[in-house]
Amino acid sequence: MSAVSTLARALPVPAGAGMARALVERNARAFRHGWVTLVSGLFEPLFYLFSLGVGLGALIGDVDAGGGRMVDYAVYVAPAMMAAAAMNGAVFDSTFNLFFKLKYAKLYDSVLATPLGPRDVAVGEITWALLRGLLYSTAFLVVAAAAGVVRSWWAVLALPAASLIGLAFAAVGMTVTTYLRSWQDFDYIQLALLPMFLFSATFYPLSTYDESIRWVVQATPLYHGVAMTRDLMLGDVSWGILAHVAYLSVMGVVGLLLAARRIERLLLR
Amino acid sequence: MTTATGTTAVQPREGRMARRAFAYWLTNYRRVWRGSLISGFLGPLFFLVAMGFGLGTLIDDGATGGLGTPGYVQFIAPGILAAQAMQTAVGESTFPVMGALKWQRQYHAMLAAPLGIADVVLGHVVFVTMRVAITSVAFAVVAVVLGAITSWWVLLAVPAAVLTGLAFTTPVFAFAARQDDDSGFNVLFRFIVMPMFLFSGTFFPVEQLPGVLEAVARVTPLWHGVELCRSLVTGTATALGSLGHVAYLTAWAAGGLWLAFASFRKRLVT
Image 1 (tube, each protein chain N blue to C red):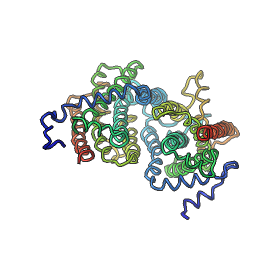
Image 2 (cartoon, each protein chain N blue to C red):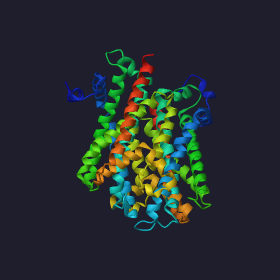
Image 3 (cartoon, rainbow over the protein chains, first blue to last red):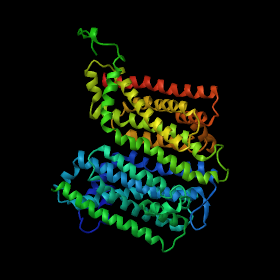
């Protein structure tokens, strides 16, 4: 038995989806030839970090990271890139990849002919997305720390935080995917993601916005992901962080339940 | 292809029927243009608003007090104009080309008609260029309305952006025709297109980069496209400099076309 499958079988998996690890193992095995794609996914947030941090940082100087903390622009933008990468990775995995497996590869038709159920599919796919995400966020954090833009040991908690962001977006992304008709519809996902990526206090502080529209920004899930990750990486942790955790947890759980139900209806009708 | 069968006489010279191939892609596009509007047009607009107006406030009040334009937004608008041309061009020259080669096989269908390799390539390249032109015009109009571009030279910056797109379209056609599956596109997007977008002068002058990287950035076609568009609309263009950029971009487009003909011929005929 290879190391990959040993790892897949050792994973903890929530109750009610006892066979999900078999799907994780399948994905891990199928992915061994796609390692270029796997590794390449790591570079996008790093390119953004160095482009904005190094290139623009010199032009910007210090930024108010909230509550009067003035930090280097690179320090300000690094947590946002980590949170956004967690979102993008999870959404990509749970939409494009899932859609292909659902419509073209007909993977789940064969999966459901085995003892696996729809809930195994939902949990298994999301677990796989989270594992990939964890790989990326760990690598990103290591590079960010080496570049000197991490300010606290609390940053270690940014790893589970990134997984939480991934869970919330993967679960919702999966639910949305079950409603998509064709590849053209993916443009609408882009339409939701790109503004969130750009406007969720990722590149500049919330105080830049007029007070009348700040609540719109604060309502988006990525805003909470970014704020949570930023507090951790700057070491500015208070009880307020639990609000972000609660928001993303509710989104994840609701998304997961809906996704399992939709897959059941699509596949076992 | 048609050798001693006697049909050679009625076969038009290759390249004369590119219009037919173009017509096919246009018909196709009439059905899906709504979605492409989102990715091709709203995306760059979001970048302009977020970076130009949002991040711009930090840069205009920042350490150096701006980049010599009235505001940061006037600096990046021509940069994004060129960069979106690159992205549209690469996007339209990767998956659609692979699809037409391998999945839907439109190219095979065209070659079974009296069209030749040159018709197939030129027809599709012209279509992609039309797509780039549409997004460039749309973006330029909005940038002018928002006050991010304030010069009449924008009328020349738009064709400059289209030429920038063409400098990517033809080499990517050649590249796509040599791929067996789409994994190469991931590498292309992540290691070539994305770094160019972020480091070739779109968001900050390449002088900010360390020496070696600055030299690399200046070799990329995107830097020449960005410089050309920016110098035109900010009134810093010189005739000689602009002609240099145009010549460099044209060389990429022409070299790419030559390679694309070769790649397509190898893939589809022999």
